[in-house]
Length: 496
Figure 1 (cartoon, rainbow, N blue to C red):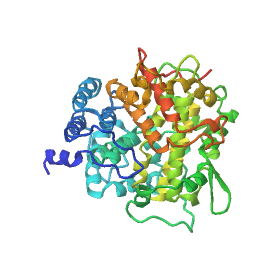
Figure 2 (figure 1 turned 90 degrees about the vertical axis):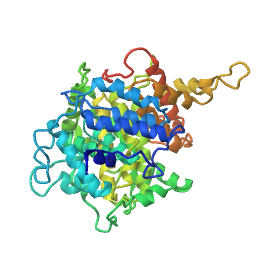
Figure 3 (figure 1 turned 135 degrees about the vertical axis):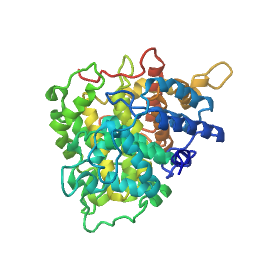
Figure 4 (figure 1 turned 60 degrees about the vertical axis):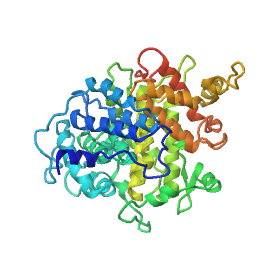
């Protein structure tokens, strides 16, 4: 196969997502926009490196390109994104040696071998497909806890450094682009085993009476065709019965436990404000070392071993979507302005891809992913200073932003009739590479969970106020914050 034929196989035009629970595409997608975004993705893949500097900050170009594409961005935007991003990025360079099946484990965690792992996963993904590759290299017990040698903890690597490998991989799965799946796997391979205390060997234990999955895409059929009726949805909202008759808890109950446990106080853990952006990762690692086991303990009854069926998995993905939005949006609410925390924002931008993963994973692997994702999200919440959750104040403060304002003979001013229209438009033209990812995720959550009524939830102070407007409230707060002069994101944390 020629080099051009290979790149064409790795980067076909984007296609439909693997599940009906994945984000829908906005109007505006045409054959020309597909050609334009694919051309930019190919150039990024072949010409530029996955990291933008020696410190390991990431190349976000593919994420921004596909977020803008999914929101219906017009054809010229993709070339503009490439021209803006390219000067900030490292040129692609070759690794010291090739990766083979024999030496695959020798260079894990070494960024110098990214290009070699990328080439290796080109062949694996094209030959074996997504489901088999994910199971073998990421989610199998042997991938993280081999029978001999030290634990490799590949699921920790998948979620390391602000969830970037799972975002790369998720883009590939959602848009059916093998080259991006390979990028995500290569990213995972060269990332560290961050907060290893959040992944346990016991996570892979399956009850003897559990029904295991078929060989390929076991959750996909059920997950993609799932449409829970309201009675069933209500029974899963705040908890669900395990086989032994005990109640498994909602994620808000887990969050409340962490918010009230003095072991997680910033002063107890020695967490302080920092100027270096990368210092946040060191604080996360301290949290994992000091109280990682306590996080696992608090979340132990959230997704039990005997509940990994499609209905429960879908409900748990929803819970994580609400959690991500609360951590980023409500925790950031201040009377004098919204704090758009850069690190908690990544919980939002990564959680949008969970349905795409579940479309390809066995129930056991899906359980491992969702548990570890929750634990990692909570660890970031603690590492950012365990901010308060002022749900009541947030709702009162954002009420006026949602009220349509009359304008002359018109029913309402253009930016108030449907706030999502101005949110999406701003995200498309702003230029920041994280903004379209954030707003697309919040828009997706609003589409699938926007009809939830107040009174649905409990477990947190003010939870009874939460309804489907949460997502547009957070999106509108983000829009206003990112319209302000200067950097659109905040790095200072919540350490008072």
